[in-house]
Length: 162
Image (cartoon, rainbow, N blue to C red; front, side, top):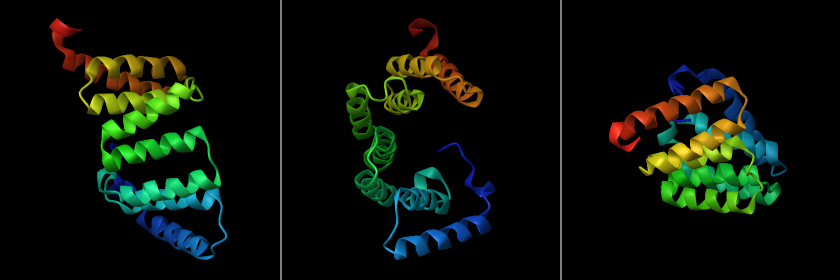
């Protein structure tokens, strides 16, 4: 998310979506799709990922977990917590999810974990986890993203550490 250029997003469509989400939430009869739309709206309103209201996003994920609990929702919440509270906290949450085994074969869980390791300066651990994510995905755009991250981390290691 932090690499997306929010200035390219269609503000008119975002405003239309925001109005629809507000209408749905005010009805007090909403389900997981409305909550997912509300999360997307908070992201869309921010000029950049770092500027998003992460407190609100985590709160919406808390409600979503009560409405429709799943390991993927937990993973997304953990990523939001990492943005709100720091990568160490998010990494602990992701490690707990992965320890249960439910997302062991899900490349996005490993990619999220690798990103938090990268942000913490745990380069070797990030590389190993990105390699795991790469082995689990067949989608070309995601493979290119992970390969780019690995190249960036490899360059950071230098010849004496690699």
